[in-house]
Image (cartoon, rainbow, N blue to C red; front, side):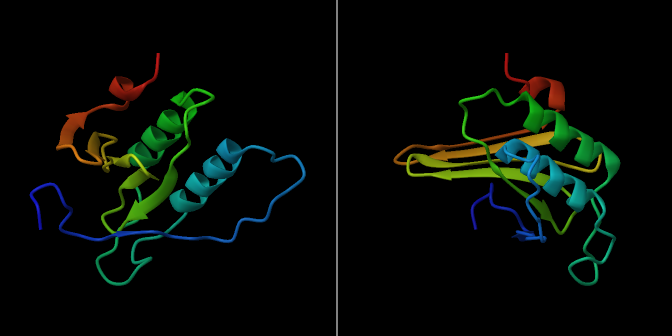
Length: 130
């Protein structure tokens, strides 16, 4: 396992999401999914799994809203540590960003045929698109 791989598994959580006529955008559906993640209790994935904390949820909301139109929207997930996370898996590479219990972010990027980049310890203001 490389130094940048997580020691705990990030678990995709799929919750039932009925589509209502007023929700046309993927962004609105992703915000609804974040709200569902926010309601998950401790122990949601067995002993030791942690519910996301408010700062993590708020950072995820803010980040999602900061992504400008035309930029591919990520897939959200929650880790067993209660981190809110987004990832992009594209033919050109992979990226993920996660927000811990304090809302502090970390970013991992791997481009096809290139080195990996890992940055951690920044707040959500750093990640806002111009």
